[in-house]
Image 1 (cartoon, rainbow, N blue to C red):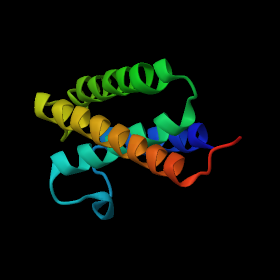
Image 2: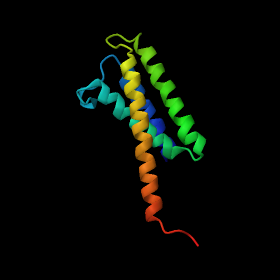
Image 3: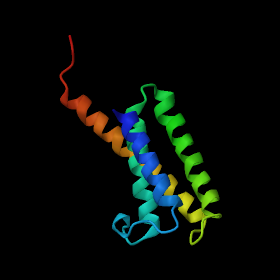
Image 4: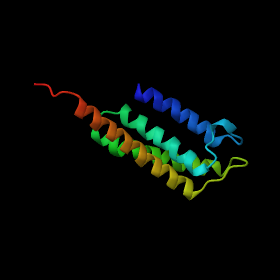
Amino acid sequence: MGRLLLLALLCIVSYLALTPHPPKGMDTGWDKANHLLAFAALAFCGHWGWGTHLQRYVGVPAALLVFGGAIELLQLHVPGRSGEWADLFADSCGIVAGLLLAMLILRLLAALTPAKR
């Protein structure tokens, strides 16, 4: 389920990032918050979508950082859009926030689940 949701979010984020005029209802009012929230959601879903430690903590964040960088490069060619280093930084902060939230929830679930004997 996590992978399917991640794929849907990747499509939505791609559309919102690469369309010359994104819908106004999908905007927080501050571009950097948009980036942070989008990539936090992507990282959170990515964390739940893959099982191995290496995939969750290295593969997903690296792939999302490359995705964010690709968006910034592509935005240089979209009318009315611009690629910015600050956006990529906001993306990376969102990745960290999404992973931390996923880790916190995993720990809480582990603490609430009785140990098997």
